[in-house]
Image (cartoon, rainbow, N blue to C red; front, side, top):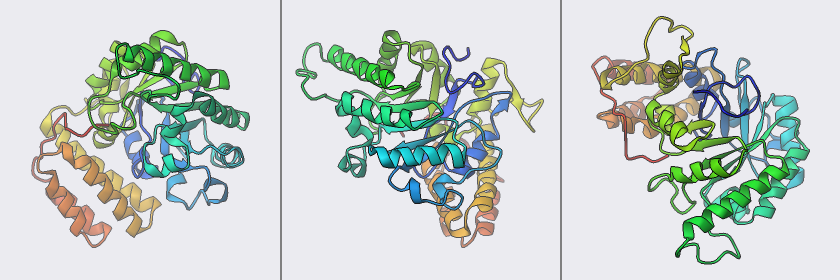
Length: 364
């Protein structure tokens, strides 16, 4: 089970990737997750959401959201914006100074700040306007440009989307929307089939991914409700998409890449040769502790101590919901006065077995 269509370049051969997430997909987390990527597996890697209004004047080496490690490859930073001058300058800097392998346009962010400036998910209300944003990005780019979308909203001028035949109308609008993006030069799209109103509530409607796959030949990444490697396989099989994208669950259990690699016949990650991926509540709980210690180490390498502690605490608050008694871990990290105390507290906590569940109510 490999990629059916080319995403980014012919070297990408692994159909599972990490989602861009504010506050999470920084350099330290990417490096920690990458530790679990099977040998010879190539996938795409995101950044946090980057504001194109700020990028032209930022110091990429010192700004936490744009820090990167020399060994990172296939990085596809995600930008937010709709102004050609800012987008153009940002794209050129990301490609020529930073080394981006692709550029992803955010059309899925539902927060008020993005809506206020008429970007993020606001772009999905007007297919022509969204296509112009893609066009201006492609014009300034020498690397592939992708778009991350949410489920189709009720578009202006289309009536009775909530009545009989509503699904058909919504799907038709999504198809027309994606066709506009393709014509504007988008190389692939990622669909998270929840509306902006849903945010993370409810269930992701994978049928929208399947419907889009059946009506367009544009490479397609599916996103939403992937918490295990089995979920990733099911999404690929049930929807026909080319790649699955996982967010908080993959941050919580980065060895999902290793587990999924075993399904596909890939060798174990470097440094883990001859071992099987952790499975089951006890093994995965122990691995969470090891991964967290690795994250602490990488955070110490790239961030100031104060910033590193903030980022680790945010990671723990977000991902500990998969752990039995995860609040104990949150408390240990909250009470630590420095990184050394935090590391010591984490080691002590994970000396005893801690179980990790496969599923949580947290939606992605």
